[in-house]
Image (cartoon, rainbow, N blue to C red):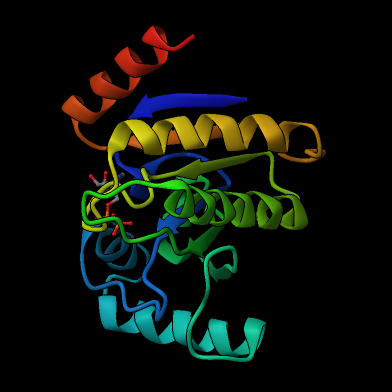
Length: 182
Ligand code: ADP
């Protein structure tokens, strides 16, 4: 069910794309900034939309690992994207342990379950936590693989999960890692 691809998630043709957000949905940098800019044309506007959606959907101003918020894809609809699902991965700063892994699993599973609820067939993730949050890419890829394998048993609507890697180096590193650990 999981496919690793190289690309730009802001134009990846999956029905839902996931944002590696921070808990306040501020979209200040990295993939969050790129998605906000591409979706609304204006990052501030997408932050406003996201915060309003968070209030409506969760009744609060910040989200925990495993909680997600959905916003419309707006301009990204031209690529077939219907929803943006915001999830929050752990901050690692280079340190990886069981606690980070659990938090990342929750973040991935929360988005997958929301995709089921929305009834979409395809969902694309960026490498959540492997950028500014500093978690080792190999561990992130491994956690994605394990979590999607677990989720497969409960999936009804979702048929395809993509992990979209932005840089050639990350993409090659991820493929190499998976080949070595089949
Ligand atoms: P985090 O704070 O969760 O680490 P980042 O946005 O810093 O989130 O990075 C997450 C991953 O998203 C990184 O591997 C980064 O290279 C990647 N990324 C950045 N821009 C894009 C994009 N347009 N499409 C897909 N992945 C992207």
